[in-house]
Image (cartoon, rainbow, N blue to C red):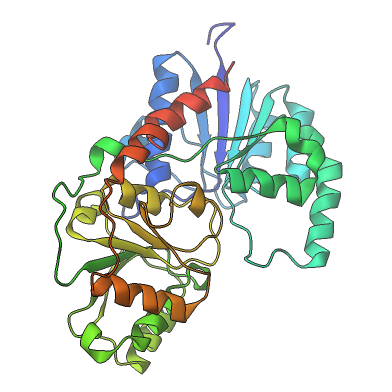
Length: 361
């Protein structure tokens, strides 16, 4: 490696699964290519090896039975390597790990925060612990990145407002060109809905099931909602659907690798989430010219404007969601605006990669 060549370590607590390729995978592939084109070498630290997509071109160091942080510390202790930058994704902020990295590396450390916060905030004890960690360990992190303005503010709320000069937002983006848009403004008699989500309680899909149960029988008659995704809350969601006898309305499709082709066949994405950072599935849906029905949590309202490119309802308000769906099914409410343009102009992967490349000064 040349004397002036940049060498980056990216530590990412993100399991590489060929049957679950999402927006972050596309970003990693695009960022790796952009760095390679500029002669920047990257060592990637993931929990496991992946060879699908462009991962076969990556230099990957799996954690091999220890935590990702432990694996990286072991690596920099055992290998004669000095990094220009160390970047973390999906790694807890302000821990002793960052102090240990600085002990062995002169690298500039950039910590990217992808973590959503609870709807009602952390309990007092956890808030206090985070403040203490901010005081002890934030000095070892040169730059904090929030994936939405909501996330950037949450970093300051968690660890202290003194971090503001070292905190900035770089929005997540999606690969626009691969998302097939709905080109015609089809006005269906019976609109089709989809959900794209990890199946856990905080995603609020149970609220959607209960909201559908409240609908008049005549509106349920032709209602179809396809749910894409998997997760630990799946059996509870199955139980709710069975309890309310809504099997004809909900279709659990599991994880799909071709979602970018499928959005175009629907009319609305429903994301009744209780907590969010910045949803890639919302960006993908809007890029496919499919409006979004969602809650005002996290960074959702930084991309969804009520009555323009989607509809916002109060978090956990099942009756409000049911009433909104009834109005949409009856065509009392609808979105005419092309929702793709906003994503092209502000939330593409190209823009995301460009903004991260600017950090490598």
